[in-house]
Image (cartoon, helix red, strand yellow):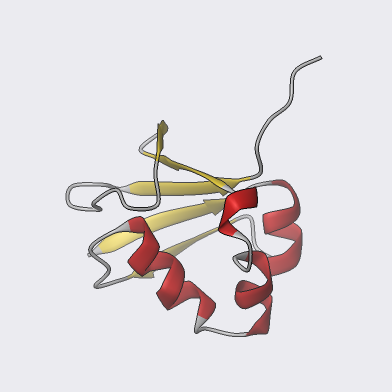
Length: 83
């Protein structure tokens, strides 16, 4: 399946891309992260601590065990703080 993957804040800085269109066989967000981490060191560094990341599926907050079936967009970002 094809997915648009979007990276925000320090995730984008570590990977060096704001977004990309990828072809994946991942069944869940966690599977997708495993595929991305295997790409190279920059992805591995960006996804080293999943507790410091949030994920949205088609602009809805999700979890790393969420299925990707029917999803078109996955976004990764650090937790937001209010002020």
